[in-house]
Length: 322
Length: 293
Image 1 (cartoon, each protein chain N blue to C red):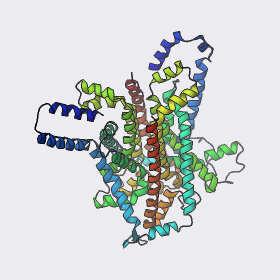
Image 2: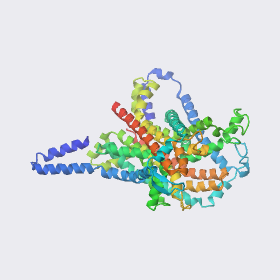
Image 3: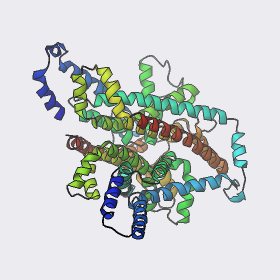
Image 4: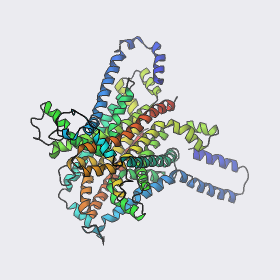
């Protein structure tokens, strides 16, 4: 907008000045060039960093997926698509893919709903709010690896704190009788729980920052109009939170999809075990076959592109509605 | 504060219906209780981490939730092996990556929020692409790249990787913040004689402090806790490695000793908590200063 007004202003100034046409045309070309180059100092450093740190390794990964390696990791030249056919012939792949979908959908949904509630609560004025908020950053401050290990320690079937608690409550009759983390469904549920546990703090803070950016006048106006609490939340808060929600949700999908330490630390990282996702599968395959692992990364990449396209759709739909 | 004064002014005008509402005290008590419960819930695993770090070795297998005596030997044991150097390396990487991210993300986010230029969509898509892959997924590619550049065992490599992988989030969150600020505000500043960069520093950045602080904290913590790239690149430089890698060597050394593992984890978590404690106030003051009034 400002750009076009500037251009018009400049043209109307130079127009009545009676400059020769040719001069004006080359001026216009220069101006167009200057305008085309204007974004460079603003976005070039970011672009350079992306190309260097992210795109370069991605290209290396694609190359690796089409190369043949022996068991020692030595390169034996092009392998065509054999790494991919080998990957798709893996009997466990279907289970891995289904589990990845469940993993992402469950963790992100539970995280977003929980965080909306928690952010709303922590946005209220109450004594000691600061302290309560500090507590919430603990899972975010500690590394995910450490959190996963602490939960594994607490779920120890012999003397883990959660096992002891469950025993005291009568939920577990005998120590060492059941190991939650070695049974498929309970282990996967605990892993989802830990993933939600580490995702909620960041999401809550992102939404909290979004909530606090909402001017109080809007709420005053809603109150004057006699809107109920739920009506205000639905029609005022949520639409204003949309950018924060979209960003938080997108970041969560990416993080959860790429999530590695939780499942790896809690079940020991066995690719064929009942709770591996694509990332775990990729990592464990890497030890035996780099090429196949790279092929799995490429497939992952394809999934993520689909997710991103869906989100771009959603964000376009968002801005169109505004 | 601001909303309180508004409500105090509005109160005398309020209709009598409002007096029938529950006294706000009860509501505050319920809010408090719920918030504190949530806070405690999120603290418990880390409390357990601290308790285990303080637990004497011979009480590790006990089923008491609290040990009968405590010891600091887990901490002194791992500190005596030169953990301080690694702490310094971790700080260098985290501060370096955070500074680089802000330096690169603020101009990019601002410009993409304000101008529709050719290649803007492509740039934002590129930024989004960087969020797709995490170092975990492309560790082979990263290792090959820095090997070619002869930059393994370099702190700079880790600063660059951490900045590169966290910049996307910073750009997106800042873009959302900058877009939400009405253009008229900075246009007014420009009319008043500010340059575009001046307007960015004097108007836009103070108004988007919560977003900037969020991006800052996110980057710092991610860089501080990064493990896999550091482990892969710091192959022959154990003393110059960040804390996360150093702790992992204790883990393999005392693989069954949870005490050492959790003592190291506690030490690694403290700086982040301190940083957050310092900055939480900034979030609040940034919010008060940056409110639309």
